[in-house]
Image 1 (cartoon, rainbow, N blue to C red):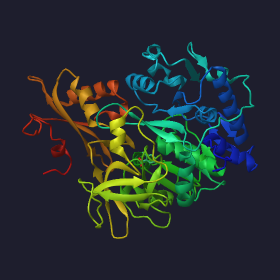
Image 2 (image 1 turned 120 degrees about the vertical axis):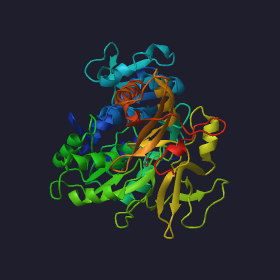
Image 3 (image 1 turned 90 degrees about the vertical axis):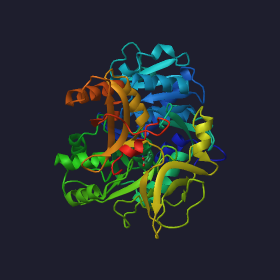
Image 4 (image 1 turned 90 degrees about the horizontal axis):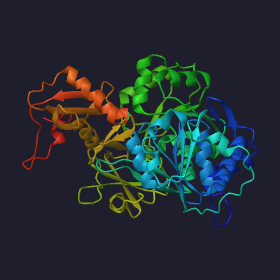
Amino acid sequence: HSAGGDLYNAAEDLIGRNLAAGRGDKPAFIDTNGSHSYGDLDRETKKFASALASAGVRMEERLLLCLLDTIDFPVCFLGAIRYGAVPIPVNTRLTAEDYDFMLEDSRARVLVVSEALLPSFLPHIKNHPFLETVLVSGKDGHGFTLLSDFVAGQSEDFQTAPTRPDDMCFWLYTSGTTGKPKGAVHLQTHLIDTADLYAKPILEINEDDIGFSAAKLFFAYGLGNGLTFPMSVGATSVLLEGPPTADAVCQILKEQKPTIFYGVPTLYGMLLASGALPKKGEHSVRIATSAGEALPSELARRFTDVTGVRILDGLGSTEMLHIFLSNRIDDITPGASGLPVDGYELRLVDDDGTVIEEAGQIGMLEVKGPTSAMFYWNQREKSRETFQGYWTRTGDKYTRDERGVYAHAGRSDDMLKVGGIYVSPVEVESAILKHESVLEVAVVGHADHDGLIKPKAFVVTRQEITGDAALADEIKAFVKQALASYKYPRWIEFMDDLPKTATGKIQRFKLRDGFE
Ligand code: 3SK
């Protein structure tokens, strides 16, 4: 790593390497407001760090960042790291209760929130004794300090904190079947390691690339795609502030001419359905990536037919920070996740923990590599289950063929991946159960017309209530109100009874597609 001696700071490295290479005037990010050079980023992160010092923030204190994809994201994320504080980017589509939990769990001292997202914080913002500074990214602070005022007049002369390679650098929350989200604690070296191990060798990213990640920066996947990877080589990253609708994404592909496009299967399905995808010759994308859930081979084939671009499907995790299993530009197995990324070791184990050597057997995938999170904050037991010495358990079931190619075979828990984000069926069931007409419910994954998984609810109504289309719509709307909207059940099937074990436990597996 570039810092001398025993010190290493991820922000100093990612920015400093570009200044040292003479890229001070080169665009690092392009957002709705225009272009922001590596020099601008250097100055703005220093100003943000100076402002944190003025506000009395100490090294290692946490900042919760609930930010849309604009230049303020990299400035606050890297500025906090430069300061030696710990940024926690969070999903921008969650509920007030989710954010309440995250503020409490992290004891964040600073919250930086996009103006449009502030309403989701207001119900609980006063309940957090550790939260001292609330900054609003936007034009109106609604009674809180504007981020622009916070940094105005601050010094551009800031000495980066003396952090070490194994210092806590940032957290990312991830969810499980039961319980609250878990903060995966990542170290200073993890960002650059994902670029060195995946983006450089597999995507062959270089300084002439323009990257565009439709997956947002708050996801581990988007953070690598949209921030670490371009910065690691002095490339440029296009940021989309709003939702990645087919129109918005296609407009960027046609006008900003990215050379690398990072998507998720649901988005590839949407882009194809829109009919607006630029054809061969109307864009500059040289390679596309997919992660978050397995990419159906049919979607990949249709995308390549229209655009002429191949999609590299891969598997990563929030715990490992980015992709550790991937197809290669010259070696794509349709419908599979590909081969281990060099620098990571993979193995399949059976239910007893015995390593499976034979090809074709299903096992739980475990991964060993330098970017594994240290633990989940405040979650000893869950940390022990996932981080077992050098090996990290992914929770995904996989098979490996004779050549060593891995293909997804489901989850070992009941978790669903919806549009690349984990959804707990238990959480959706709890929300549905609060509806006055519902007696019992079970939620499972169900494949849509593109073969992509979405939540489906099997509902038993209370006596004398008829389950019909109107009630189904009402329940869907009810869940959308209670939870992040991507979690709502796309289908509701009314049943007289749910399948149960002798002890009364609902047997979700009997409701899944394909169960006879
Ligand atoms: O879901 C994935 O495959 C993924 C990929 C990269 C980083 C993070 C995640 C969860």
